[in-house]
Length: 100
Image (cartoon, rainbow, N blue to C red):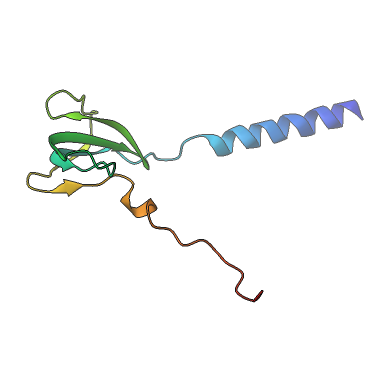
């Protein structure tokens, strides 16, 4: 009995770790020379570099001062604007309209 439980726990832990292993991570995307608007009311920040790894901003700073990851897709965003988090600033929650 103990042996069966031990085997089951071992199999479960292997399955859990196998599922959490990163699968084909996408290469980082780097926007260079972009003007960043942070949505706080502060002035726009021109000539910035923004590194996006997966679905997160992993680095942001003045162009030339940010380390660009090897193999990254680089997008020259001269004359463009980037507003991080804009898509998440206006969200409609799910409401139960049947309760009126």
